[in-house]
Structures are given as structure tokens and as C-alpha cells.
Length: 484
Ligand SMILES: Cc1cc2nc3c(=O)[nH]c(=O)nc-3n(C[C@H](O)[C@H](O)[C@H](O)COP(=O)(O)OP(=O)(O)OC[C@H]3O[C@@H](n4cnc5c(N)ncnc54)[C@H](O)[C@@H]3O)c2cc1C
Image (cartoon, rainbow, N blue to C red; front, side, top):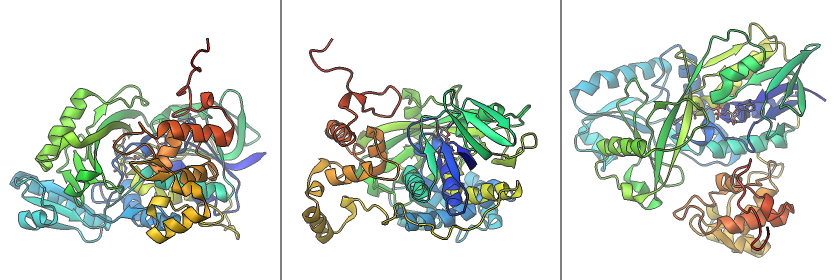
């Protein structure tokens, strides 16, 4: 079988592109090194649907962010993923920050960001009563929003599978040959053939370019790690919107923001690292983000932190996203250096990449029987999002919905079983966690993980010893007691 398009990398960039292609009459595959979608930067970031004032006017980042902000909200509505239009403030401390806020305001106006305003201390404190009394101004961007970056990516991937896209997981691309105009892309054992290839490999995208045949590729990537704390939902109300400090040349600065699920997120810092897959947190880094968060919100209760994590940016040696057709390898398209606002931009980046495929000669016509929802029968609505009447009806219909497995996040056995029947079945503990939040609450999976593992083992028949936390060798059970 020869696909029309093979996308390498199932982060938000690759998945949004696959989903868009699934609405056309082309055969599309996605090859992903790990066991699930959204395993790279897409699963560990600030989750902000940025408004679009930060990027320099005229750049792809600016154009795709502003369009992506609109498209992301539409996509969330279409696929039943929650998005909250909370807006964002860039908070200034005294007159010295005012020129930077004005510069961002001007950029935003040039980029076409709606509703921007620089507001003074009184207005800021009315909107955000817990912001530092030393904050004097803010750039208010009402179109900024928050959603779940891996949630919408998973939903878009399910939608793509429903419309015929094939995902190849645990497929790290290590070599590529071209035979009679067709790419033969291999993980060392298996081969996928396609007429066009799109490189969406995140922090590894520049290395992958060489594997795909580029010589003297102009882009290099420096991985830059950012660390975070997540605070308990009990203090989620302390911020109504995303609060950034005035940015520095090391990034957008440390933020305090509500999450779409009602927690508070604090972070990130930004440090270059050697290994793009190193997502460890450090005591020094977490102390730095604590200090940064206290500058915006002096009373932020860091003793309410329930977990910490880190994500890695794919920072290129140029200012912009590198979205281009290869000059050396016909049929190859690159999405390289897609750092922030890469998530907010992703639905618009997908449009841009599909445009490049068309320019390269791919013929695209609309699919008459395209299904716009996650599954042929609609979007999955989780038990904890139903009204009391709907919950009662669902339990009557199927008693598995009456069995709570994750008590912190009210995830039922019915929800978990449902995810095993999804277009991309959730067959690891973390796949369940990312789809349903089982294990993301205060106890961080201490109570529910064994039951989740048992359900996966029972339903798939894979045996408990083969259930992993997150693919690879992350088994939970190595042997039974008494076994050698
Ligand atoms: C700390 C931090 C904060 C951020 N905050 C925001 C924010 O608030 N808003 C925003 O818009 N953006 C934000 N971003 C940026 C955003 O997360 C990224 O731009 C976006 O997730 C990039 O998506 P991607 O699909 O290009 O890459 P990724 O999500 O990294 O996906 C790349 C995929 O390629 C796979 N892969 C790599 N090599 C191979 C191979 N050889 N074969 C097969 N598969 C391969 C990887 O396993 C991975 O799954 C942030 C990023 C970080 C790190």
C-alpha cells in the first residue's frame, strides 16, 4: 500500500494536519515514535491559546497564531473539548515595563489581535484581586483562552482515524529511501511508503530532516526546558485569567494561570539542555518558578502543589517557524522549530502545511462522507460533565457508569471501558490519564492506577504484566509474588 501522505510526529502539528487531510480524498498515515499522540511538547506546556500579540508582525508565527486562536476555539466546539475564554494579562511593574507593554500592544494591533487594551492598576485589581499590589499596568488580551493541549490533540486524532487516517505508533523513523518517486520510511523493521512526507518531529525535527535526505539543513534546534507546578483545584480560583510577567529575552516569563480543569498552573522557566527528551524537574528550577510566581501573586500557596512537570521547547536558530517545501528532496515538507505559540497556531499551521502539499503537486478534493466528530456516533462526553439527570440515566443504561474508579476526578469504570473502544484505544495508564484525568487529581493516581491497569488487562486480554504506564519498558508488574 502506498499512502499519499505520511506525517512523521503525532504532536499537535502533525495531528492537526492529519485531521485536515482526513477531510480530503487522500490516504494519510502518521508515524509516531512513542505509544500515543501528544507525547512531546504538546503534552507539557502552558496550555494557552495565545492571542497573538507576542510574535513580530509579518512572521508566520504572528499570522498563524492569530488565525489559530480562532480555529482552535471552533475545533474545540466541534470535537467537544472544553475551552475557556479567560483572556490574558501581561503584568507590568512600574514605568520601566510600560514601553514593553506598548510595544506588545502595537505588535498585537499590527497582527490583527482584537480587543487589546493597556489598563491601569485599579482595573487590573478589579479583574484579578490576588495580583501583586506592586503591579501597576497590564496589557489585557480578551481573545486569549485556555484548553487542554493533549485533550484537543487526542480528539483531533480520533476524528482523523474515524475518517480513515492510519496511525503507526512505536514507529521511530530511522531511515528513508526513495524508490521511483515514493518515500520508503522505516523504523528499522517495518516500512511505510508514501508519495509525500511531512516532518513534524518537534524537538527532533532538524535531526529527522537529515534522515529524510537533507544535506546542510539550515535549521538547528536547541532544546529548552520549562518547568511547572500544578496546584490543587481548591486554589484554582486565585487567577481568573492568564497572568504573564512582562517578557524578557529568555521567553514569555513565568505565568500564573487557571487551567481548563480548574487547577492553577505556575511556570515555566527556560533553560537550554542537551537531550531533547530530558523532562526532569530540578529543585533549583522549581524554586525559580516559585519566586517568579510570587512576584505576580505574592500569596500563591505553593504548599498546594500536587505535581510538577517539565516540557521541552524546539527552539530554532531563526526567529520564526520553519514551514517549507524541501529544496533538495521533492515531496518533502518541513514543520521545524515549532516552538510557542505552536500549540495555539496548530490548526492554522495545518492549513499552511496542506497548502504546501498542494503546491508540491498533491491533488485535494473534499471527501463527501467526512465525519466531523470524534467517532461516527458523535463525541465522547465524560460522565463527570453530565447533568444529574443524565448521570442517573447513563447509570441505568449501563451500571459500569455507577462505579467510580478515580475518586479525585470522578472517572467511572464506564468512561474507562469507553476509552478502550475509542478510535485510538487507550491501552496504557497514561493514555487513560490524558483522556479522562484518571490519576490527575490530588492523590495523583495512588488509588486508581491499580484498577485502571486491571481494567486494561481484563478488557484487552493483554495480561497485567504487559500493561505499562507509558509504553516502552514502563511496566507496573514485573513478576507475581512467589515467582522466580
Ligand atoms: C514549556 C513550554 C510551554 C509552552 N507553552 C505554550 C502555550 O502556552 N501555548 C502555545 O501555543 N504553545 C506553547 N508551547 C509550544 C507548543 O507546546 C509546541 O509548539 C507544540 O506542542 C509543538 O507541537 P509539535 O507537534 O510540533 O511537536 P511535539 O508535540 O513535540 O510532537 C513531535 C512528535 O514527534 C515525534 N517524533 C520525534 N522524532 C520522531 C521520529 N524520528 N519518528 C517518529 N516520531 C518522531 C515525537 O515523539 C513527538 O510525539 C510551549 C512549549 C513548551 C515546551
